[in-house]
Length: 241
Image 1 (cartoon, rainbow, N blue to C red):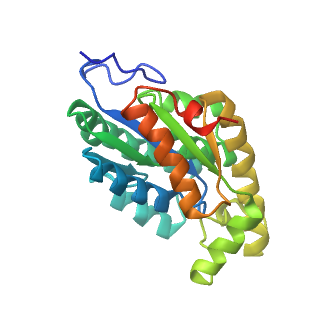
Image 2 (cartoon, one colour):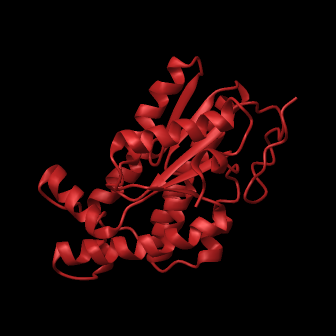
């Protein structure tokens, strides 16, 4: 029998609290941190080692992902409404993807988790306590890895990737500046500052996201293997900092 799941609040009380032998691994990071690339490479690695892997991320639920995308195109919804939409998406994935996958013994790789949502909502002026309470249904991951990348590097990567800066990634809805470059740097700096506080609060294992892709992947593989195959702690495999 696996240990009971721990939640950041009361969880989902109408679902069992035990019987989830799988592992929940979270990879966090800002837009352009290389997070999605690392999750994709890690999923392939674990599958080759014989593990069943399920990937999740933000705005992917069948219930409401399309609604979120349509709402972003209109740029008309308020901060609290957008937060509730993302929370609904996240809750749907917890109930219908994450918990069933953990119950089947799979490794769930989350390409971002509630932490990005907390940071985004807090930057937009919502009460930090209210936001954290909102995500009390979220199970506590077995390990959380954070790719730390400074905003200036994120700017180079974002512009180099597509030749333009995304409206939402630049925080244009906050009216920080009429210049998108300036707004991007200010917005991402604010997110960066909040993520740094979450590192200690939630026990992130921090990796230098400015390293080469293969070096980061090597560290992730070593740390995740220690958690899911050896029953150890990722910090010992990383020489945690």
